[in-house]
Length: 253
Image (cartoon, rainbow, N blue to C red; front, top):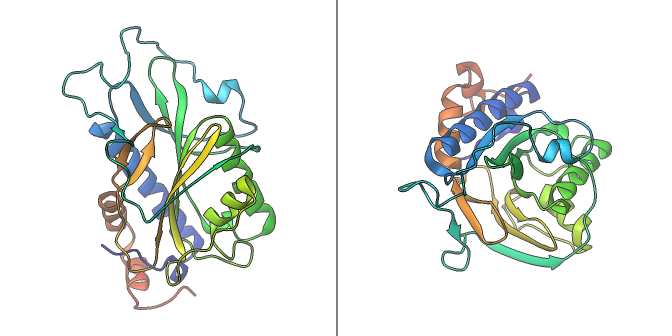
C-alpha cells in the first residue's frame, strides 16, 4: 500500500493512525523481529534523559546474554556483512545535546537499559518553532546518550522545517545542510548514536511504498523494521470516513 497524503485529514485522525501504527510496529518487533535479549515497549517519557529513563526497574534474567542466547532466534544483521538498503548514508563526528519524550523503546532484558527508540513525527512536532526545536533537541539527546534512533516522517515539510525533520536534526548535529531529492520530501531516517554520528536515510513521497528500515541495536548491528506490513494493518483500522478522504473522496473540513 502506498503512503497516503495525511494533510487531507485532521491532526487527530493522524494521531489515531500514529498510535495504531506504533503498536503494530512494537508487536511485530516482539513477535520475532528482535533477537533474544531485546524487547520493545511503548513508553511515555517526560523530563530529561536521566539514568531513571535509560534503565527501567524490572526483573533481571542472569542467563540472558543477548542475541545468541536462544537457539533459532533471529539474529541482528551486521552492517559490514549486509549494509541497509537505503538511498543515502552520511557520517560525521559530532557533539550532541538535548531532551527526550515518548515513543517505542527497545530495551535489553539483562538490565532493561534503552538501546534504541522509534519515533513517528506528528503534525504537532512541526507546526511551530518551539515544537520543532523540542523534537530536534530530544532526538539529539537520544543520540548523545548512545541511544539509536529511527524516525518516520510522513508529514510534508512546513515553514519551520522547509527541508524536513531529518535536515533539522542533521544541521543541529553537524552544522551541515541536507536537501532531500526533488519530489521526495518525506523521510525515513535511522541514526547511530554515540561518538560517530551516522544516518541511513530513505527519502520518500506520497504514493511511495515503505521499505523495511534498519533499527540499530548498536553501532554495528540492526534489525529490519517491518514498516509496510504494519502501515497496512494500521490503515485497515482507520475509520471508513477518513479512509475515503485519504483516498481522494474529500478533504478535511
